[in-house]
Image (cartoon, rainbow, N blue to C red; front, side):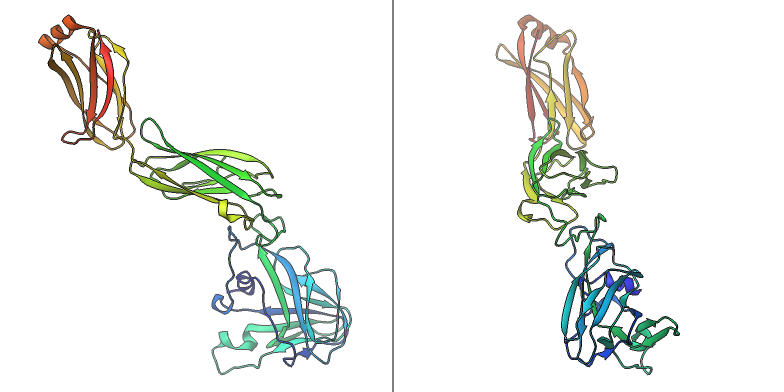
Length: 387
């Protein structure tokens, strides 16, 4: 792994105890570049921001000073660029300075303008072990001075620590401590007339900063899809939305084809840690959908047949029956059809022969339409009147 990859894993890099026998830098002006390569296992992981990102912003830098040096002026180097210098005392201790708000990048080091600072650590070379573990193969200090040959001091390191945070939206504000807003989410669960599941979701930015990368996630639901202010980069259970200004509210909906009793969780997040995470998610429960949706006109004509529009939440056969009570006798019309999930179909039931004559003699007459799976007790009913 490269040194930069290792750096991106940790929030604060390298802490050095005071008085640990620190060596001095060369006297006078010099550019000091500290390099260390290591594996992920050698770097402590830190809590990730809601959006993890390889892009990090430098928050501050810390230098540990040992005894025996001379005070002077030094400036941080990030990505090979030198930034505003500071006065570094010679008194032993640990000193933390604000960092330039730039992306964390190699090389890292110091530009020393004056002084001879006791800020160099050293590990002895171990050529007898694996090369990848030998300190002189994995860490070194490059020293550049005007008018002198460049020097690579193997096994040496600057006693520097760089504190960084994820910066997923590239605004140079740390996502863990600075780029924080207060998102609030609420949702209303319903079912469509055909049994589909629907969630009406409201997202509000109650914070003082714009949420640059607001997003909503739903727990797994069959066939879930978002509608509303979602960007084209949204997919599946996630809706990524345009920036949400302070005080702004946006409305979305989730549609799914889940006929069973189920629960759903909607979670909102942005690029930074939320100021009040307790209202970033909401959990909802759904009762099972009716097996069929049945729609019919209140009044129909025997001559044109009795029309029924129906759909099912599961594939398979459906038995459609229209029952009339005529002078104490039951007259039934029935038909079996095959339905695909959520695909509406209109069928017509017609009376013929003696049934037609009986219904005509006693028209208008009320009929009860029943739809069920053959052999099951999952009936759904509707009423109509024929004449």
